[in-house]
Length: 116
Image (cartoon, rainbow, N blue to C red; front, side, top):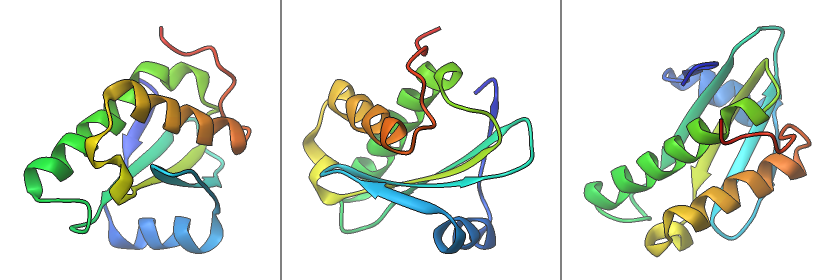
């Protein structure tokens, strides 16, 4: 991820949950908090309700890759947390990517010039 780093600490996730704005669709929930930095920080959360570890890691990889491919279309200086819902379990890469970009447009942080 050229312009982004991962959110890893519990406190970072909590800060975005509490202070950030959220939008959701049937597959994903996205929390966004604007920061004064040049890089984005992205965190992905997939609970055990979604499936076993193989399923959870597959979804994590799909969301991370969707973001990576479209990263240049997102604004800079954001903390983003993406939470997977159980409905995403059997979705294809294209459906996950469309859900992520839909939420980016709802937040008005995705301009649509991705896929570098």
